[in-house]
Length: 271
Image (cartoon, rainbow, N blue to C red):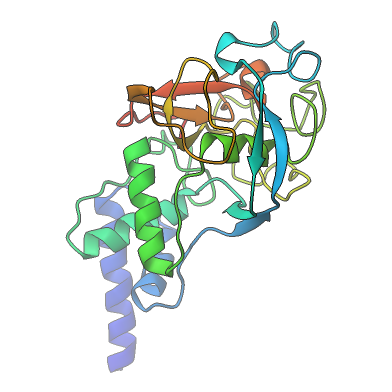
């Protein structure tokens, strides 16, 4: 009877918590497992091989889509990734990020549950998360797992997104149909809704923009030739996003496309 009362108490507190934070009822079943240490929703990682590639927009490889190369994607330059690294198999989901928020709040660290625009949580990619938020999540994940998590650099991101291919999208030169969520569904879709790239990554094209480490520069002139983050000489108030999103046209979802926002910006197209 005591055990039954304890379980019912956990569920009751979880129902109150979900209601107070405008979280879905399904979380009522998840939270007791979090509290008991029986379930921790953490990202799955994929190994990315070392190699060399041409970063940026190359005529006949990356142009011909929505008018061709943008000036901020030039000049194309060779980059060497000198050792393998790991990258998240999927975009970080709401469930994973909400677990992080719950964990931090238990330690009296003020973190907010980001709004989901009424699209749903669970396995949808988390949105309304700033670059600052993403950095904090990576630091927490490092502490949680003992592994050195961080945001990818812009060079690492583009290299991984291209997956060893030589076309505007990893599957070919044309966007086509049923390959990615870019100007397609009018909102995000659950991660893994489309097939993976040859390197096992999902949604590097579309769905939601993805923050990378680098400061924003308005071209690739002077960019590093290795995997390092590019900070010097950049816009001190902007950070780079990659991959396009559900909101933008297919040309903005090419591997070469670049975008930027202030590090405290939160929106429904980025994570």
